[in-house]
Image (cartoon, rainbow, N blue to C red; front, side, top):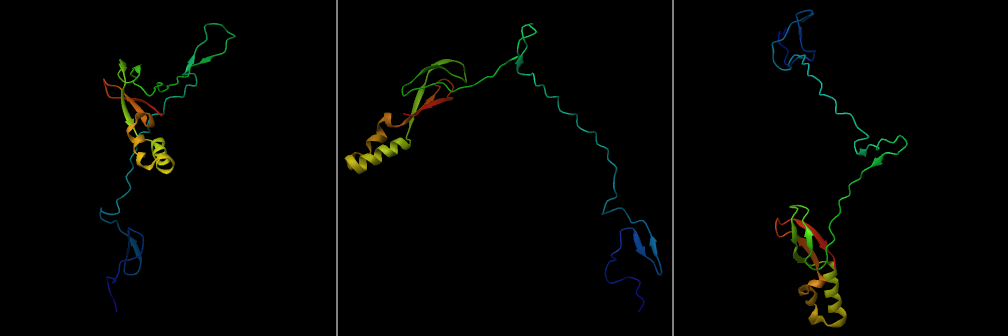
Length: 151
């Protein structure tokens, strides 16, 4: 039984084709797998060097002074239960804040206590009284959130 084409593909490396009595190297047509291509991509530039003295104010010319470091701390404005006169951090205008009251855990606890111990028909009172809720302050000019008073 002399078959020129085997019933299944050869398991030899690509580029080698079995001949009648010996293995011969024959180039394969271009296709898959693609021949290796030598691409030389340039390396990206290195990141800028780290400057440990970037947030340091140089001393005033005195050789013995220690360097002074500057730290900027941003804090939320202190707001209370009533509208506050404040400079808006977003639009930089001096405004009186607009309030939006929101129920909180304290509101639910007060309603639960009224329901259990004092008078169950009055459980709804904390939900309509603003002092039992959180007061969210907003800028009336730009609508930016300014802060919350948790009463």
